[in-house]
Image (cartoon, rainbow, N blue to C red; front, side, top):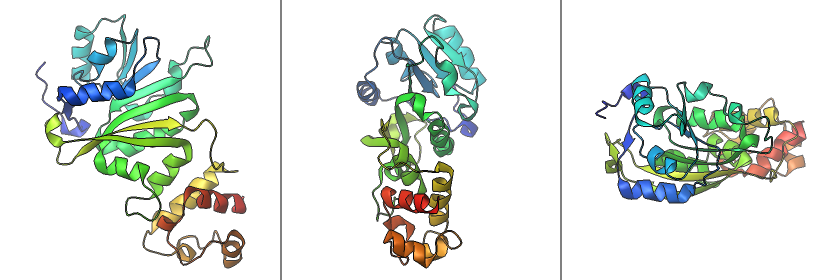
Amino acid sequence: MRHIPKKRFGQNFLRDGNIIRSCVEAIRPQADDLMVEIGPGLGALTQPLLKVLNHLHAVELDRDIVGWMESHYPASKITIHNIDALKFDFTTLLAASRPEEKVRVVGNLPYNISTPILFHLLEGVAHITDMHFMLQKEVVERMVAAPSTSEYGRLSVMLQYRLQMEYLFTVPPESFDPAPKVESAFVRAIPHATLPYPATDEVLFAKVVMAAFGQRRKTLRNTLKGLLDDAGFAALNIEPQLRAENLGLEQFVSIANYLA
């Protein structure tokens, strides 16, 4: 199929056979997996996955690509959901007869909406086994970043609260058509079986993290003003002159739990 990539959908199609093989090897699909692919595009991952899987779910917004997929793949092997991934409820794939089953999510995510998709998936993370994504390298670096590094921020903390993540490999621009202006990376994310640092009130935890990183160059005394006073900093043994990037996940949770 000759498809002209659409900028509004953030389309960059993976073409490099070696990279595709590396992605599939990292995913390790099994025949009976309940797997959903976000943004299948022209089938770089879809086709090798279908060689192994009994069935695949695909979430694709572009009607032109959906039409091509419907003529290209047997309906018995693939269910195509023509919907925005941000509006798709992944838990609808779970069979009522198999409540213990979980979803595996894969995809070459549109870089312009990758962060919102990650936060959307966190909402149903209890029903997900693992996730493997091609993303902008800068985003993956932020996902796996450690405290006191320039990449570490709200995305790092919120994802690491729920997920154990692994930066797998870097992918150069020329692996795609059209070539993006940035490097990409493939990442694995596995939900924690047990949260390492559970927050008593997760809404409050999210509020604390957002406030702390809201003005990145300011100290915690300033960013958390109205939430945490000097007595609170002292009780938690946290130096109020530090910045948000200096705190680890455990410390953010401890602030939220103190406030709760």
